[in-house]
Length: 290
Image (cartoon, one colour):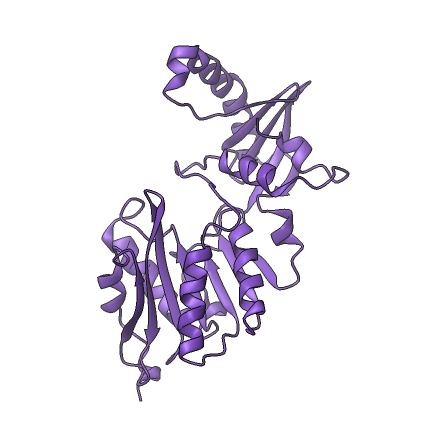
């Protein structure tokens, strides 16, 4: 059973195990119908693929950008693995769903929401109720319970948050291990909005489980990739695009060519990313050209 948000975020609560933490975040379904599903070291194979390529090129990786981090647990693993391999391990982890609120709806009833008031978890007298349903709910009757909770609790709380009422406590929807890690910095960021402060900054960028056709149309993917390219440091910098599907990681590792004019494919996992061609066609900054 998942832990309640009230207990998870309580300042005096003893740290939970990694397994409990992963279960807590995995049960959170965001307002765009995606999950903050996580497993603390699920990208080990991709990390090792990248580190092998860095070593072969005798590359020294400085600051790293990790996009779409979910709870941030895999960002911690990436930072630790980079440092163990002799790199700086400084990682900026970004996600659009970072901030949330823990709201008391009624006596004994608390709701965890995102920053827009969308309910992520109900706490009914210390028991967890998910706002989202499963097929099994029709057999157990839980479909009616969830519908009632969403109508009478979730909608009320969402309207309250959207009106700007200052009820409840602000929380960060990230792993305490990421929040307290000395080499990890967590920031809210929208991949579709150009962030000037990221320009020419990162020697390695990882975008895992974010840039795929299951989430976005081609035009949106092109816009995101155009932004990401400007965040790279130029010739020699790396970009990993990955997607988890059917228990495997489909990914492509790219590197900006030495002359700064195009992207090279350095390595692939399980045949390569489904958006590989979009990255290869992306226009690189003219100032990189040599």
